[in-house]
Amino acid sequence: MRYREIGSTGVRVSEVGFGGEWASPDDPAHARALVERCERNDINILDCWMSDPGQRSNLGTALEGHRDRWIIQGHIGSTWKDGQYKRTREIEPVKEAFEDLLARFRTDYIDFGMLHYIDVMSDYRTVMEGDVLSYAHDLKAAGRIRHIGMSTHNPAVALAAAKSGQVELILFSCNPAFDLVSADTDLDDFFNGKAFENDALAGIAPDRAELYRTCEERGVGITVMKGFAGGRLLNADDSPFGKAFTPIQCIHYALTRPAVASVMVGFSEPEQVDVAEGYEAADAQTRDYASVLAGAPHHAFFGQCTYCGHCAPCPQDIEIAYVNKFADLASAHETVPPSVAEHYAALSAHASDCIGCGQCEKRCPFGVEVVEKMKQTAALFGK
Image (cartoon, rainbow, N blue to C red; front, side, top):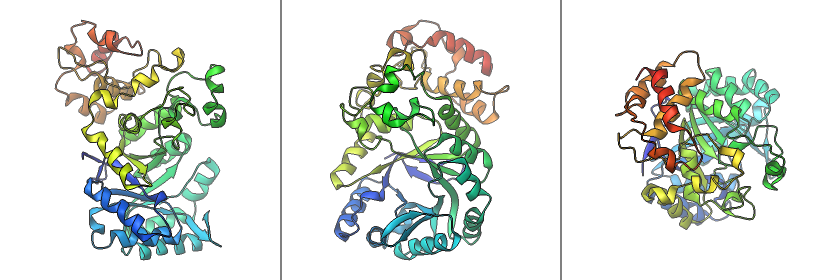
């Protein structure tokens, strides 16, 4: 298992994480089996957004005695009322629910206190200007959470959070399908194929690209939810691409986005942990998501680097996908951000080393003019 740092926090987490929502609320043995299989595979991050007392208790029991090996995302604003999950911003229920999480997990701290499920800007303002964020700061000051995070599916909300200076981690929905659409796209239409039919796509949505870029530049980490689009990408009949992805392809896509540290997979059976962990040993062909994306309508990705790595190998040992990623991060600014310049400088070979042989362009499934992009990047970074 490989590990990545979450933003600038210094916290290192496994590339594959455990989304705990399918742990049984009624069967403690089920939660224990999931946790044990995760630990066997060296997974060390768990997201618990659920307020169901049974799920919390069963996971807490499974973690008892080895809680310190886990990085836990626990949500602030996910509550339980009359036997049902409820999201709220009323501070007393918020406090009660968070205290319940600590008690059922048998711990005195949560690593990341996640401001829960903020998907519209009015709600974002309510949370950030009100009692909920203030409570999170109080928890952090008392050492009861180590960091403040946020969960959202909306790139505009996520971008505002990334720029706020208040949030160190964003739990965000990321997959090849969602990245094609703007926040106001009807996802039912998208998955029914109407978005393709109506020529609504033009590559990775600019608001989402800006989010990934901003998080990378500002040291805000991303952990991924909905990496499989609720399973729809794993089924050819449901996939907007008309072809199924594998779990490993979906994981690799998410992990090639800037700022992403871990993909939280919702395991319902221990065997699914082994499948996801298989990402770590998978070869380039098994990880290859570009073969599916290339089957999308031609206008969707043509000419746009998705950092898939098909361009390799380069005779000059240029890591073209990384060079392109840093160029894309930098080109949105009038001057190159120092952090991006440092990452680029650390590469063993640079765009200026390109000899223009064009072998990479022959391999690129999206028709990227790599040689020209290398020239532009060399001018941008000065080497």
